[in-house]
Image (cartoon, rainbow, N blue to C red):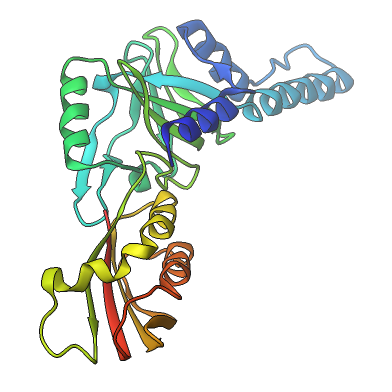
Length: 284
C-alpha cells in the first residue's frame, strides 16, 4: 500500500477518536471506568439512580475510541522477519505514553508487524535513537476498571486497538490494522527469476527471464497489492508459443489474491517453445 493510502487509513482512524494529550484526561477516563457511587444516606430509589448514572458514565467512556502517541522510549521493536520483510512490535511489555504516566495493554500488541525493508529498519532505528519516531495508536478501553494511582499519577489501561501507525520526522511511515497485520510500507515489485520450457535444448541466457517481459506491467500491478515478500512457482502448458493454464504450485507469499493475479498476468504471454513450462517469480 502506497504512502497516500496509509495517510487515508490514518485519517479515517483518527476521525472520531478523542486525542489523549494530558494527564487530566487519563485521570477522568480512569475515574469513569471505575466509578462507584457513594450510597451512604441514600434511599433505595436514590441508590438505584446513582448506580444507573455511574453505569451510564462507564459505558460512555468505554465505548469511545482514543488516540494516543507513544514516544520512542515508550515502545520497542521485536524480531525482524527477513523472509516477509516485516518488523514486529515487542509485545512483552505495555506501551507507555504521556510522560510515562500511562501504561496501555492492548490485546494484539504481540502480533503487530509493519512492512519494512532492511534499509527502512535501519532508518527507523536511527529515528528511534534520536527520539523522532512515534507510535500512534487508536484504541478502545476493554471496559474493565482502570488500575492506577492518582497521587503518583500512574495509570494502566487495557483495550483493543483499531489502528497502529509509525510516524517519523517527515510524517507517516507504515501502518497496521486492528488485527496487527501490516497495511503499509511502500510498493513491492515482482522479479522473474527463472522460466524454463520442456522444449529448451540448452540452458537459456539469464535463465529465460526475458520470456515473461511482455507480462511485466501486469506483474507490477500484482506487486502493488502484496503485503509480504516471498516466492511463487507456477507451472503451465505452452500452446502456439503462449502460456496457457498457469497454476501456482508453491506460494510462500501466502496471499491468494496475489497468486491469482500473477497467474492471470502471465496467462497468454508469448514465451515461444512448446510443451510444459515452469516460472519462478519473487515478490520483493
